[in-house]
Length: 418
Image 1 (cartoon, rainbow, N blue to C red):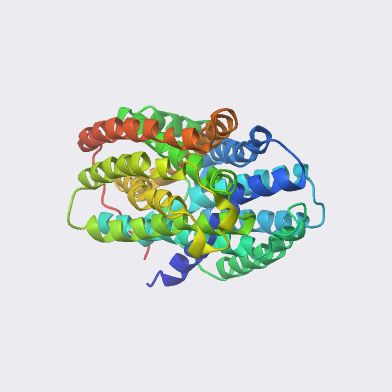
Image 2: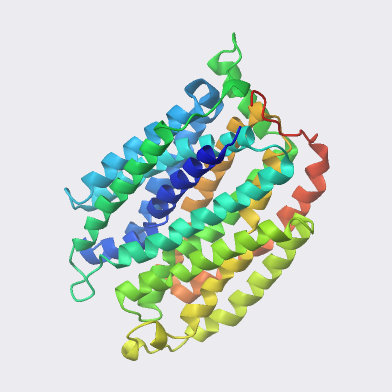
């Protein structure tokens, strides 16, 4: 049986949430202009998104097979469609917080379900790793599209204008189309039907026991640190471009897309390279290059004069070079996710996906808030130099994770019932 419709639906779901989740950097910039909030106050938008992801993932991860992966994804798409329609109708900072809370809760349902469904539609570990990298690269294509979509609605001549909120009507249409595609797509979940007689407490206990496994503890700490670094950069890059590099608002948002584009390319190339070399060595090389890029690129932002910047052609070189860090940090997240998931039985994919979402969300919140406070207190360059700390930590954690991997008994992923 062909799984192309299921894969297409998962990709479109991820595309919708890629735009919504990673618009937080753009929205942080816009709410400072529209609602006169400080940088540190605006940084709480990341918390509304990520803490909601963490809480909802914690509540539903161990019960995901009871809910049903398809039903959970349909509910998530319905929630964000409504939230998007509300945004332009009630323009206020609290509405923005509500949007990201709704997006976070919905993404928790989506990501747990998507990650668990991959095991149902792939035949072996190689196919699992390949589709995981492709899925994450498509996520970054959604992020890239979001920068241009939002910038198209921004009024550079009037920073206080709320005309940019019209973009949420477009997003509501895309989410609605994703809902209809999934609704009409059959998903066979018979191989992960909930065991009769098991209580909710038993399900939760299974997730907790999984979480305290030493190799899983090292993995979730690695995921936490990676997302802390990635979101700290991604959420504050538009503000860095605007306030440090002195670019116009729309151009600041557009040029942040370089990070998304380089990350998408990095994940696509990693999908090819990982067929030939160990994920550990690839990620180690990438982290060392990423650290060197931070040290070499950020000094270029010193004494930048943005008065003559009118477009991409006149933008300072720092606006092009630093976002290329995405090319080198990109393979980390999908590679370690695939490594842990493909070594577990299918029934544990839902709880494990929940743990991934929880600690990724906590990492994203922590990264954005730390970066926001450092940005406000010490400036954008110092805030981005901070990325060297998680890069160093990841080199240590990934070494531990690689050495502990063999302690998890490999389980071939099957597609029972197809």
